[in-house]
Amino acid sequence: MAQISKEAEKLTTVVSTKGQVILPKTIRRQRRWDTGTRLLVEDTPEGVLLKPASVFSKTRPEDVFASLPHSGPPKTIEDMEAGIVAEAKRRHARD
Image (cartoon, rainbow, N blue to C red; front, side, top):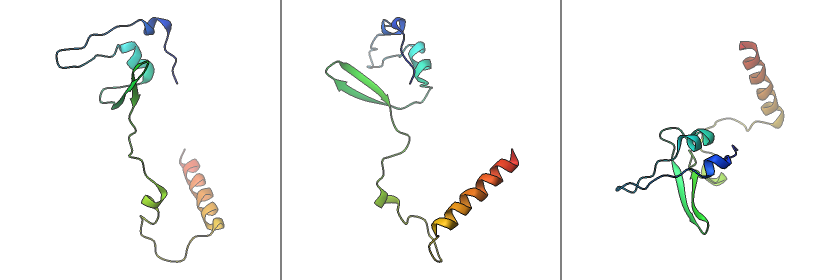
């Protein structure tokens, strides 16, 4: 993760009448927070913490197991390994 310089720690901003805060460009660039980045806001004893929100919602294995249709016998470990090797060769061949 990018380190914030001592100079960046001293940057200030102002809360607008709408409650909006503009993050300094230096911070946005270091964090790679582009336009549209969703941030989680957490109130901590030390101050307000901003963290990028996950693009995907949290799931549990039981939420996704068997979510894709499949017919036929289950694949063996050997079948899966052969499929991985075949895909790696296919991708390598196109480069």
